[in-house]
Image: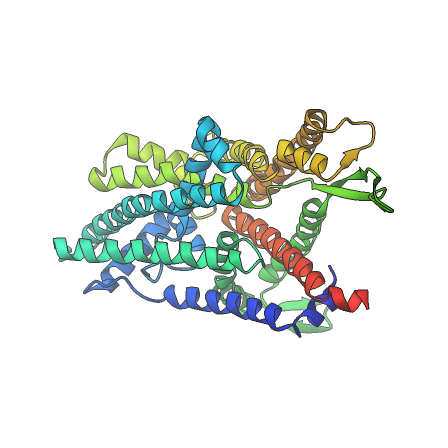
Length: 472
């Protein structure tokens, strides 16, 4: 990263405007997270939400990616999950139907039509999810409130419309961020959602650290620190482990294969062109953090269905099974889901999570890195890879390279996503209880990857706007 260049580029009006637009959009998003759904008695629903968060890790995930929208019963409660689901569906259909695949390869016009289809599909999905969430919360509120809760048709229409509007606004804000060329808008919004939860987490950790009711830390008998010794050493271990994990996340995320491109020498009149060499960098993980977001969202759907079924019939076995199987093992639910210790069911969610991350890595890489299109562009520009014929042979060669990189990249990304579950397993073996990093580990992976991707985009734009200074 060229940090000096980035700071220098902030003198450029266009660059400064883009940065302030993105920051302004994120501020607007955080304001929306505190706008409540327009219902008469929102406090009753907040109580129901508290019960839902205690019972299900699914609720915790929704609260995380909505930036606390679930806890505050905000209009962005649904978040951008409908848009993510619509993106997965449209991309799968595009690969399955040749006509749509041709449309996606038809330059900017085709991509705009595909994006428009994604937007249109996300609206009915947002309506379905809004009704589902309201129904789950309504049933939870009714079962936990003495007087019960009676919602009229007007309340249902108003609340669902508000949540669908909030989801649509988030989708629009994400696209506005993408247009600024500083990073992927959807990933940036999820990044902001996770980071916004850090102050609450840090406040809770600080409170635990300075709680000396059980004693203080004695350093070799010299003096005492006013901190809880157990919490202090646990946090020290966490910080060391986090630094180590972040370091390897950065190394893997930045790893790439460099392919040398030769450009043929052409003579036009008395002037010669080409005869130079360039490079084609191919990242180890081309898909970035998108596979993790897709996998987590995909796994949350069965849990949502299970919650709906249980809201209708609390004793329904299918609903209970879906919630149990598709709830990530954590410290909050371990004693409830696994009263007899680790069983085969404990490994189901991590195994499915790993497989989905690997699958979506291959799938999304095939979308963002089209080897046939890359080979055609090189041939048009007079470029070729030494020892490889232009055209289809180059496309096959690039396919082979990307497949090899994907094999290692997908499994590396899957293992990084699995680290919290591995940590839980080790702590269960030692102490009998997990430490509960499943969700925060996913959040850490998203935060690090999105931060690096956005920094890279800012760096590229900074080099572009300061090009004249280097040329001079």
